[in-house]
Structures are given as structure tokens and as C-alpha cells.
Image 1 (cartoon, rainbow, N blue to C red):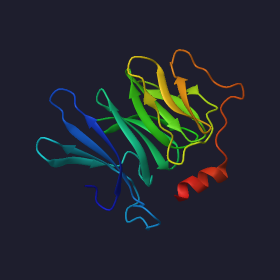
Image 2: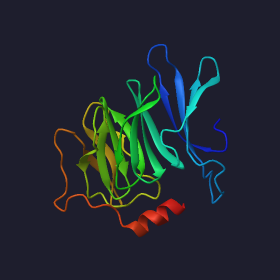
Image 3: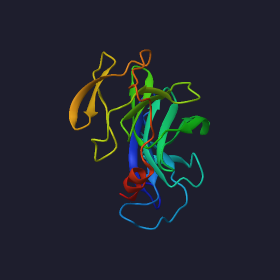
Image 4: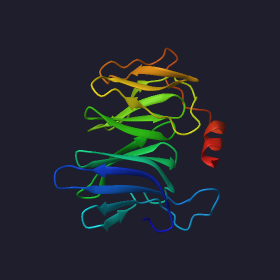
Length: 199
């Protein structure tokens, strides 16, 4: 689907009349294959007509997208390489509206009209909509994940299930009630990030 890239993430825009799938690429392709392209891209695929509509690199020279989500005509993404770079891109114009830096990469979720990023280092941020900077929501969860940290939301509340240390945990992630740990937010150790990026 994406030339010279592996597909890392898929997001669906299923607003009335849309039915477009967005695919996020990784130029590294798996293992330690040398990239054939310098920049990871996003492809828009029309599910009705079964064809690619467009392809764009939100940032030139960034090799690996980790995860994407769509909310109200805006695509949110986070990069693995360069680790932790996030962005919000208008799907109509394909221009980046906002971007910033998180301490690491991870996964995005959309819940109750908000976009959250859960990243290595046991951190959760809110990155949208309409935010110029990522807002810390929760820290201190540790690094119990082998893969990027994930959240499983309870549909009608601000609670999500995740992992704290090595334990399953119910997390309150209400963006209006930030509950940071007393130590504050500390980025993960550089050596840990380097080992994660090697995989």
C-alpha cells in the first residue's frame, strides 16, 4: 500500500460520506533493513473506490511513524523516528496545523472528543484538539510494556485500563483533573530510548 515502507498504523475517517482509511508508514520496514526512502508518509485510501487518493510526508526526513488517529477532519500522529514528535494535520489541505515533542513515542487514542498519547516512560498526554503544546495528564506508570503503551477506555467515563509497572490498572485520565505524580514528569533515559528504537 505504501511504496518502500511498512504499514505501522491505520486510522479510519468514517464521517458521513467520507469512508477513507489512512495508513502510516515506516521506512525501516522491519528488522534492520536499510531504508529506501528518507521520509515516512501517510496514504489516504478511498474505501468506496478502492484507490489511493494521496500520499504526503508530514515532516521530511522523519523515517518512522508509530501511530495515527483521526478526529473531526484532523489526523494526529506520533513518530518513532524522530522519537516523540507529534503533529495534527488538516486532512483537507494536508498541512500540519500543530506539532510538538513528547519524551518518547507510543500510541494515540481518541476518547470523548479528545486525543491522548500514551508513551514510553509511563506518561500520558493530551495532544488535541486545538492544543499548541502537549498537556501532561498522568505520569509514574513505569515501563511495563514490551510494545508501545496502550489505553483501553471505558466508553462513558474518563477512566481507561492500562499497565502501571507490571500490574493491570484503572487510570483516571480526565483532562480537567490532571493527576501527575509528585516527582513530576521525567523523560525516559536515553539508553532506554535507544534500545527501544533498535527494535
